[in-house]
Image (cartoon, rainbow, N blue to C red):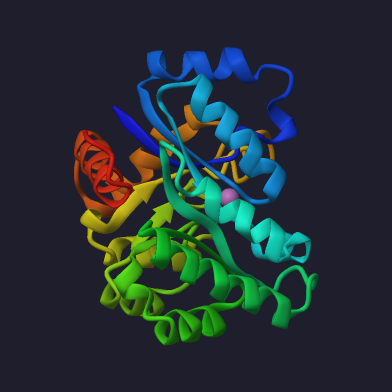
Length: 256
Ligand code: NI
């Protein structure tokens, strides 16, 4: 059975067929899903999805590009939701310099606040870091992120940087990008990262693997990600599926 560690089934891309799709996941071997909050609205929908579907767990957090919506009052609301049953992480949080809004100082402020929140409520974090490698790592070191634990989602940096995250005992979310022809740097990183620190993810509806690149992604595409990881690591497909399942249950403290 496959553990989907990062999806956004609250996204409007699933409005037409959300229920049919989610109900069908089990028969395709997708056993557990973490639906990841990216805005306050998506956190609200995640809470509903968790109630409706026994196999869906949730992460509560605001994506760096959405942090302009946060204020003290909304942050209190976010903290409260972290205590809900089946909330397994704070995320996705971090820095995204690909998009220039909001300004870096705002992104950094709420990254730090949400890291502190994770420490306070004793949950691991789901990190989003895009074109912000140095600042993300510097902040995580300063905030002693290793004590909090978590996963760097959609890992996109080098093997050298992977070593830094391994030193903090972090996991690495690997998704459809691993199947892209131009992902040489990521393939090198995945060869280097121990299988015991890898989680499978899709980031649905984004980042569909080849040959579906550019189309709507869903957890049904996870087998091709697992297959690509298996080939790079020189292990069987089954070993990738079983190990990453165990990894995710361990990180998110979900009984297997
Ligand atoms: Ni995401």
